[in-house]
Image 1 (tube, rainbow, N blue to C red):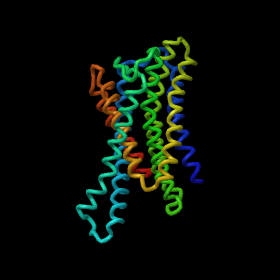
Image 2: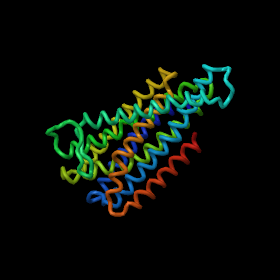
Image 3: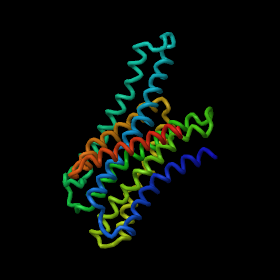
Image 4: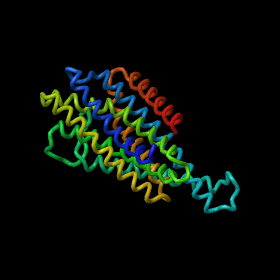
Length: 279
């Protein structure tokens, strides 16, 4: 298959996952139950953690180590200095990713399902603020897919199109967790606006930022090859921040938090299996 098709498919399916999830408004008569919402959120948390570790942090550490090993060829394999320096890009990238999401939290007015409001003061209504909260989550997910494809694309010439299977696994994982996420946006909107069509459109629109962010991440990662460990770790940090700051607290707000825990474990295992199998 043409390498560019891998990229197009990867960017398309992350948006398709949200769109298909939003289409559940035409099946469900009411908003999803707190129990099902907890399961969805826990699953999303598990997928994002696994993607951050297996698809981003692991290759970032490897690339950082290889970079500094090339700078100090006289050092033996396993040298402490090279190992320490190789970790720094990953550490720095994760911190920057967290700071980026923290900045978005302080700038963009949004509200979580728990009722907690963040961002600058605004007269936007509650529904729009909730829409923006989900959109903020989708930015790091899109960047993650873009960074992964950009890093792999740099190796297409030497490794063939097969090297793009690993980032495709990331995209598939994001699409899977975007499915319930689309539903959690579309269903409340369909109830508030008394229109399933409007709910579907808004739910689907919440995911459009992902392929846009993916395109930006792809070109940044491909153009600045030397900074790839930073970009990969940046995506990991942003996703980890979202999971810890927003998704886990929202998931644990239900009276039976074990549902969220087991859903997260299942999501983690599915994403890990996808990454290992396809990557």
